[in-house]
Length: 114
Image (cartoon, rainbow, N blue to C red; front, top):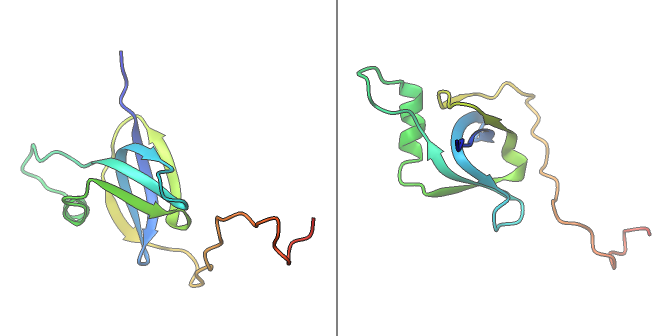
């Protein structure tokens, strides 16, 4: 019996927290980015539509793959089933930390001590 992996990804974008679901997550080919592939959204089987999920679905419409900067990703969880995708307000501090570098220091860096 094969199981399908589903990942819940929480990330910050323009002061909002996005919660999306995807089948594939990797470090990708771009240094400092997380690659999100095969986004999963709810089916429109019923008459009832979730406006929050429809908003995310329309925002990612036509997107095959998305690359998120490492410093914007809050959490990635492997879950047993998909929940509702949503956008919520970021309830953090009013101070945004400056993104730290993901590049290692070179050995000939004059400011580095051995």
